[in-house]
View (cartoon, protein in one colour):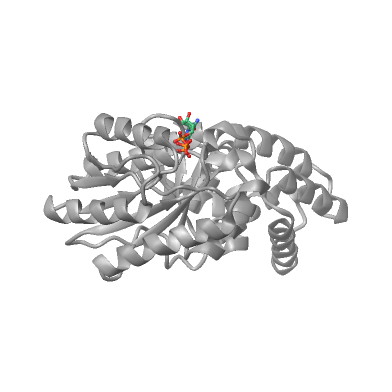
Length: 331
Ligand SMILES: Nc1nc2c(ncn2[C@@H]2O[C@H](COP(=O)(O)OP(=O)(O)OP(=O)(O)O)[C@@H](O)[C@H]2O)c(=O)[nH]1
């Protein structure tokens, strides 16, 4: 059975609305990537020029140079082993390789939250990447699941950030613990933990400031917040999610490296995937940082945050070809 067929069957086991969200959210990347790949895979034979053209397409989609070279190397090896001759067969093989990269070893993919008792999620990232919106969306997601959620406004550097979080709190219908602008973020987080415990919350989402201009301060602040959290709740934070704006491409990679040095990141949230044709950044992040992408932002609305799924992602990119090969109606 071809990989496309298996992928189609696997994706069809999830709900249509999720598949639809991935498809429409990733339509810009899909349109540009698939168009460019069609020219690669409609070449007459599998040769050096084909591989070079494919490298250009992948790098152009922000897959990153190292990850692109690894992908193309894997493709070469598989082509030899499977003795493929027809360039038309490469798309299914390529999608198989991409799913393999996105799934990694598969061990750390989901959110590591407790069944009972308070789970703490620390959210880090620079200003403007969609941090506050992501916290609002996550709060909505978990509230929909029937969990009690509290937010802690730990980005005390800007008054605007606190107010924005309060607006999201009202919109979603969850409590927000805040102090005045300029106060100690660790003190806000401490109060957030006490409030979450007193109110019997399941999940505390902690916002933090993200000023990269001063790396030493950033590290110190994050370390202090971390200390307070793990002192108050053993094994916490259960997740430290780094929010990255996918439209900023390799800049996002740089940010990821700096935050990774400052604190242990357990997952990535890639926002604004709907606004970019360069969604290949998800592959670069997974491969080069060895940190799983756990969520993707596919729009501005409350329910436009989806748990990341490598198969859904690749399916959304190649859906037209999958339908053609498996011979069924996309809907
Ligand atoms: N299209 C789209 N827009 C998004 C997404 N996530 C966030 N945004 C928008 O990005 C802008 C910035 O988001 P914020 O949540 O304010 O960013 P922030 O990182 O909290 O920034 P500060 O509050 O300034 O620190 C807002 O206009 C959001 O609506 C997404 O997944 N898709």
